[in-house]
Image (cartoon, rainbow, N blue to C red; front, side):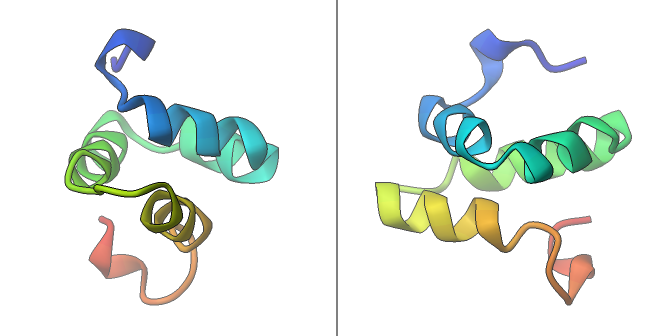
Length: 65
């Protein structure tokens, strides 16, 4: 399980702003969450992180899972 100390702060902040996305993220398998978090670790700006979080559950899903 991922604990908050392992999550990028910008990712955590964006999830907090999008409760619907946070709920869906929490319902993913550990493997799916790990892949998304790994992708979030490559993000370098606040705007990129917002776009990343907002697009996590848009098609095509295969880019995240």
